[in-house]
Image (cartoon, rainbow, N blue to C red):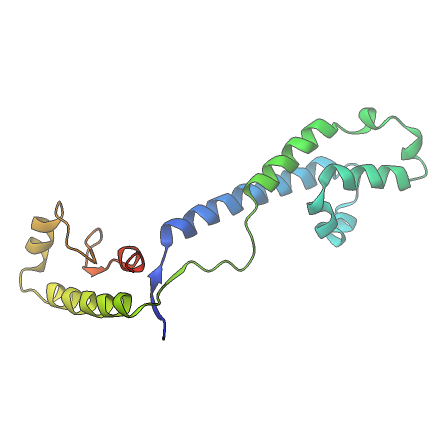
Length: 162
């Protein structure tokens, strides 16, 4: 059975992008927070290790430094604040290479998608499309998304069909 791309789940994509921004903001704040202690060049070289554990990376750096290891860690850096940034980073971190594409994989979904395409084409060609769209805005047309300016197939509804 072939699969047909119906569209993209833009809502999930926007949510993921927003979470990624929060995660990146926490990472950038953590890098700035430790920049007085660890040179940013070194931090950028070890960024993947730093992402695994902000506070663990800093503690290891302090233990390996000949001068810093003799000083009480709490007097050098506030690890609680760094752990808070790390928690936020991990809470909002999104996996790489996520696809938000929606596919029709069953015969019923593919047939419904083709039907919806034809119906949308007819509705979009209507001579009084604007008036029709306005009249139908509070209505539901199965398998058709009328939330925008044009009639398009409702990829989420179609993907839920068996």
